[in-house]
Image 1: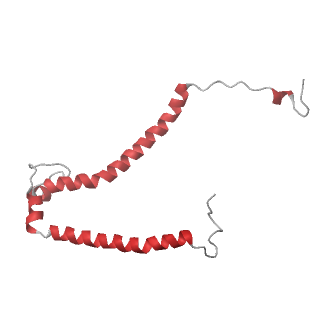
Image 2: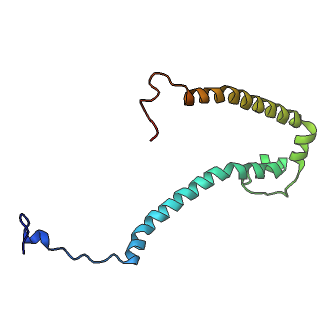
Image 3: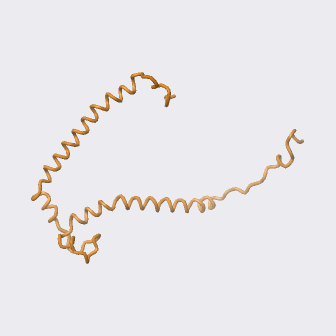
Length: 136
C-alpha cells in the first residue's frame, strides 16, 4: 500500500545505529576539559590578589625589597611586624570608620531616592507605560 504523493523511498525508514554511551562521553570530554581549564584560569585570576596580599602582609621588609628572591614565596620567616605597624603607627581605625560612614551614607541616600522612584515606575500609569515588556 502506497500513500498518495509519497514515494517508496520516503516511506522506508533508515535504520540508524544507536548512540553508544562511550561515544557521548568521548565527544563531550574535550568540551568539558576546555570548560574546566577556562574556569580554573578565572579562579586563579580572581584568587591571586588575595594570595599576594597574604604573602606581602606577613613578609619581612628585607624580603619584600630583595629583587633576588621570588616575590611569591617566603624566604625569611613570616612575621607580624607589618600588621603591628598598621594598627599602632597609622590611623587605620579612623580610615575604616570614615569609609564605613561614607558607604552607609551612600546606601541611605540611594535607598531614599530609588524606593519612591521604583514605586512610581511600578504603579503610576504614564504615556507609553503599557506598550513594551508587559508581563503576561
